[in-house]
Length: 131
Length: 290
Image 1 (cartoon, chains in turn brown, orange):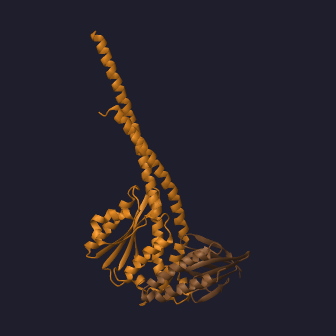
Image 2 (cartoon, rainbow over the protein chains, first blue to last red):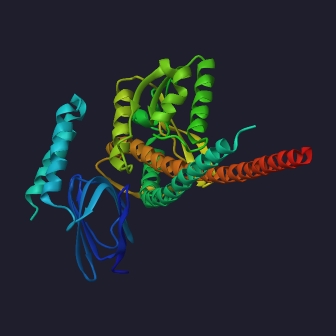
Image 3 (tube, rainbow over the protein chains, first blue to last red):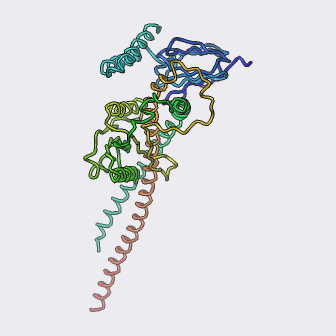
């Protein structure tokens, strides 16, 4: 079995990454998961977090907020609404996003409130863990 | 018969116009390239997103619990027409064509006794349909300040539409925009976004997936984003179309100005010749009279 798989990361505005990876760590909606070649087909939505890709020549980080990932045995597509290269994004950027999300959470109608608040706390968690 | 001075002034003014249209054409060409690039870069996202959503929708769609965004509200009494046009004019028939399509659709729906509501994106389209559909306007999205259309703009419009949908303001939403074919051809297009219409995925592979969270929850999460994605794609498509239309319109204008200058120059030369001939006749007949 091949020990690499195709990794694609696309956001609406551009396609960020397309290369071969050996393992990809994904912040899934119900917990982080690491997908390796031969993973069973799966579709998961994403929490805001870091997608960590291991390739033959090192690790690459991408920060994603909202979206989903499609995993199959020989490929992974991360389809994110907002995605940035790890080194591109700073804590200050993230704080803007958090502020927006917080505002949206306050204005959200009752039935969406829980989801919106969870989104905020996920973002805060992400910001705390950033270096 | 205009005097020589008038003709000269006109030639000068047409020349100035030609300079402006030429410049606008070149600006549009540069912007078109950028708009096309943006459209191309969004394509992988749109395609994948629609493929996944289509697969999900096909497997959940039949069930009773299918979300309203997919299954509809069970009625098609009230239609929301989202008319997306440019913020600027001078782009040939671009705005007029989209407005015409929207007007025809509105008239057709009204003839069937349906209620029509209109949400406009872009000032020019709003102006073009104001007279006929002004009473049906429910909102307007202004993108005048937006230099480069981003996903956030599309999201804003989508949110506006979804809030209205949740409030039960309409049953069916259709967007109107122009599909970019090439510089001389942009096709005004209508596309239904709510309830979402997907081309059925042929492969049954979607059922093999593990879903996290559940299939239904995932679908409910993705459908609103599907609306934003479709609007984003339409906005980009529209942007490229607008620049393409402007480019060919300005190209025509430049050529017409050139023709006009030629014609006026000939007229100018003729008049000048006539003046000279007249003077000669006067001098000669004066000399003969002596």
